[in-house]
Image (cartoon, rainbow, N blue to C red; front, side, top):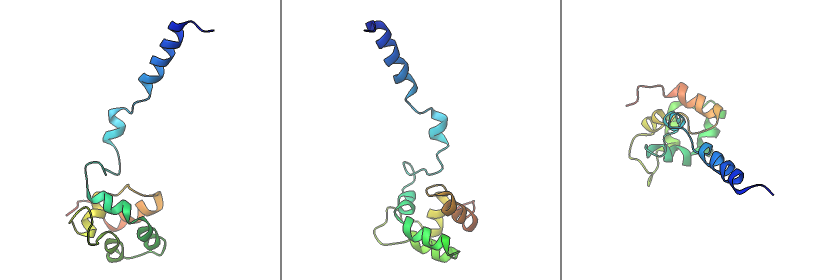
Length: 104
């Protein structure tokens, strides 16, 4: 049986490494915790993925995230520009190409 102080030290070491460093949180490419528009972008993943795979236009992509009852009243283009990292690499690339910063 392991002595209690070794087990306690092991548990303390694990607890100290389980939190995310602030630098990881600050570089989040999908700021859904601070940008309500990102929730609309996340909720529109099926429409966005279909348009990205079919080389959809900017108007088609923006229409995916512009719907009644959304979390944000921004235009679809503004939502996509503010939230470029909320999906898979393929969808994010299509969004970044069609809606580059600066955002309106």
